[in-house]
Length: 136
Picture 1 (cartoon, rainbow, N blue to C red):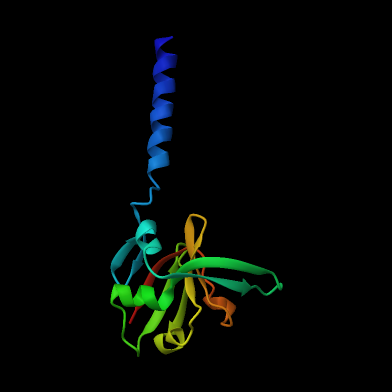
Picture 2 (cartoon, rainbow, N blue to C red):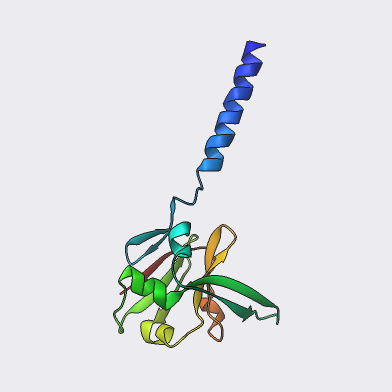
C-alpha cells in the first residue's frame, strides 16, 4: 500500500514540474542576442493583421510589429539581412530595407509558439515556430 501511495505522489510531482517547465518567464525568442519571454514580447507594440494563405483562407493574427521588435533588440542596421530561424532549423531571410517598408509585418502569437506573418510577401517568409531572429 505504501509503495502505491509513494508512486502516486511521484507521478503528481512530476506532472506539476512538467506543467511549470513552459512558464511565461522562460525565454522563447532570441533577437540579435537579446532574450525575450512571451510576457516581454506582449509589452511591445502589437497589432492584428489578416493573412490569406495559398488556399484563399484568411486568418487574423495578433503579434509584435517586427520593426518595433528589431529596434527594441538593437538590430537597426539598414543594410542588414534579417534571418528568421524556426525550431526545426528552417531559415528565411529578408533585407532590412524590405522589412522596414512593411508596416503590417508581425511576429504573431500562435498558440504556444511564434510565427512571422508578412502579408503580400513570399510564402517562404511565413515562418512557423520562430525561436531566433538574427541580423547581419
